[in-house]
Amino acid sequence: MLLYKGKTWEVIFGDWSQEFLGYSIISCNKETLSNLTSEDWIELGVLEKELERVCQKLFGATMFNFSCLMNNAYRDKEKPHVHFHFIPRYKNEVNLFNKKYRDKHFGYNFWKWDLNKFKRQKDIFTKEEKQEIFAMMKNEFKII
Image (spheres, rainbow, N blue to C red):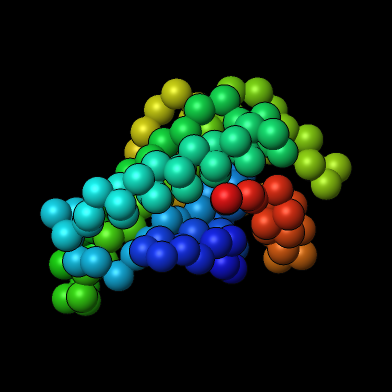
């Protein structure tokens, strides 16, 4: 679900998983970080800052993980493209849609337990709730 499309970057809301409330990907079609221009880096910084503002305002996010790994493209023999994972983290419980969302591993690497089905962070939101989270973020997202 597209939150934003700019000159170089687009922001995709992670509707396939909201195990971290507000999770999004900032992506472009350039293959390596060294292909990014100074203008690209500036736009990226503006987008990251706006995503932080939106998630703090709407959901009370405490801090954020921001990562660029790009391993899977090489592993899966696909054409790589620069993209960053934007992962809001929550020290406090969030009440949304009459559900209690808790960042189970706050303060730790967000993917440390991802491969362990018993310890991993759970996505508690329905498809409809994810669409509503997207709508909330889209309505609040403002880039001038």
